[in-house]
Image 1 (cartoon, rainbow, N blue to C red):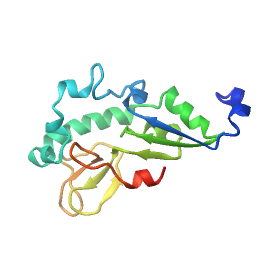
Image 2 (image 1 turned 180 degrees about the vertical axis):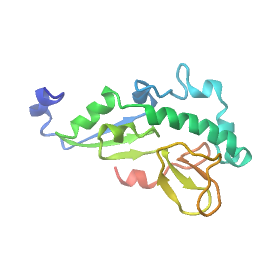
Image 3 (image 1 turned 180 degrees about the horizontal axis):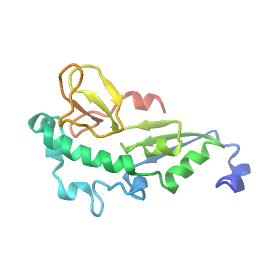
Image 4 (image 1 turned 90 degrees about the vertical axis):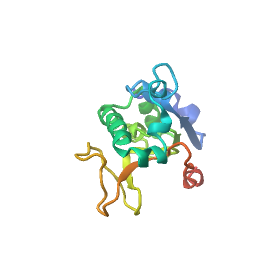
Length: 170
């Protein structure tokens, strides 16, 4: 029996459910958190890895760190939390507002995922308007855009603003 079949009568009058998720939901899929026990920022200085200045000062180091994280994320599978949220879409409109950059909500089947901090799977050019999902390892470090400039992860770094268009989609 599907997860929500037992309560479908109780939830039939609900118009919309919004889930706000962060690192905790993906921890069960093997994605480390940033600040919790064993968090990434306990062993790494975010100012040397997750700022625009760090990127321009040492793009090789920044990309080395992001490529390790990308490889882990490419191998990760959605866990029961991701799957439950996706399953609920069969009964009610669901929106996921997430701080996560791992794409696991989408991989689980959630159709309306709003990414507050961007996506590690997506890259963008540091100069031109190029942006694309590239779900594999780069052969060069740093990866370069067709225009000749460096690509960067399409994530929100410290000191950058959250994408304002996400709020309009809620």
